[in-house]
Amino acid sequence: MKIKNLALGLVVTVFAATSLASSGLEGQTAPDFALKSSTGENLRLSEYRGDVVMINFWATWCGPCRQEMPLLDELYTRYERVGFNLLGVNIDDDSRRAMQMIDELGVNFPVLFDAHKEVSKLYEVDAMPVTVLVDREGNIRHVHHGYKPGYEDKYLDQIRSLLRE
Image (cartoon, rainbow, N blue to C red):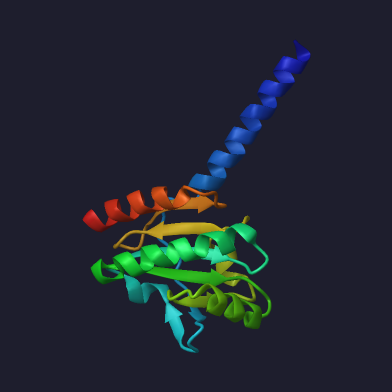
């Protein structure tokens, strides 16, 4: 009986921790930021107000990030013309590795560099990748931690829903 109660307690603790982690930012205004992009210009999140924006935090050492990026690029290419933007935020200390990966994967969406992890802290990034969907009014509507094949279907549903609003 003691083991059963201990196991139940652990399940409740883990559930509480994961539900807090996944919903902590949802419903809040997306913190504004400006970061240097792969093209050399500074991009500011607030400049995209009126569009649905996906912010994808990634790193070159993250295998799931490498797997996910071409799929995100497809979403970006498909929906950019109807008010969808994607900002890839790289957290590597050295942006040269990120630039090499961008070129290697043929990514077309804007990539920003957060070497000091200031924006990552604002968005409570605690895993790789973290994907945040922001609605047209600038509110965080969905936060996804990690990536597994099939997540892109969930992203697609959420993007379409936000674009219809």
